[in-house]
Length: 273
Ligand SMILES: C[S@@+](CC[C@H](N)C(=O)[O-])C[C@H]1O[C@@H](n2cnc3c(N)ncnc32)[C@H](O)[C@@H]1O
Image 1 (cartoon, rainbow, N blue to C red):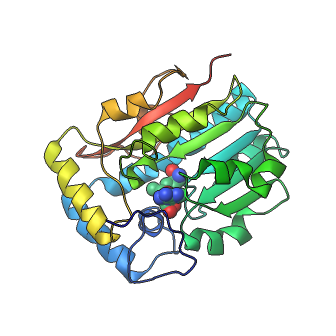
Image 2 (image 1 turned 90 degrees about the vertical axis):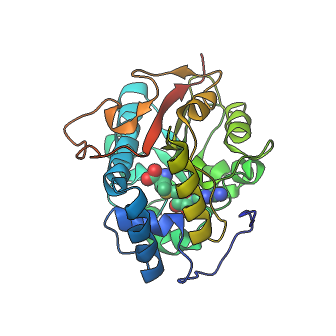
Image 3 (image 1 turned 120 degrees about the horizontal axis):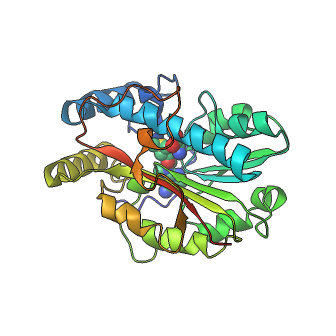
């Protein structure tokens, strides 16, 4: 299997990527025929995925709005940010406070191509291409050092990304969450959700499909208890770890999934003060 950690600077339109498939689900235009064909195949196994994707994005937007407005967060480090779409993290946060700093990290070269123009709208926002597992590289990157002060509270996002990486004692989601959390000041937040299913057949078939479609550049569907483990040592904000459309819903929540073969499950944790 491909380790997935080598960064590609060239866009290969023939092999689907998670970023472009997700863009298609959200109604974006930064995707190719191969991505759309993969989505159509995936829909046969998990037909509620479009609503799942919309609700995931709205969860991210609610979290950023609430953390900026109610918890005073003014710096965001967004791992696996995805292709720019409507209401990206910096737009949601900077509408509340224009001085908010945001660093986007993604390993997909398309995010860099399409992201730079749209996401780097001011000197308070940057996009870097890196594998989210390269914590030293990301925290030490010149743009991260310029924009994020890790002695102050920060929100680190791992929103809908851990299913993109395989298990590993050193680089799997649990090790990565621990490694990043150790670097955060008290009062910082970590946001995590990922695709889960309690049905072993769904876990096996979707994991297999996505790894074949992306030529091994994916991880796996996990269980709710796996996501719970990523929050060890953190205070979990109300309402806890949930299917994300039920996390502090407002009028902007998209229609719920009609079927729940898999869901985005997660929430928000705070480093104790
Ligand atoms: C489903 S999208 C989630 C986008 C966004 N976080 C959200 O919740 O709307 C997953 C993103 O993670 C990125 N990704 C996958 N594996 C990655 C890795 N190892 N390092 C950095 N980014 C990665 C993909 O390129 C894609 O943009």
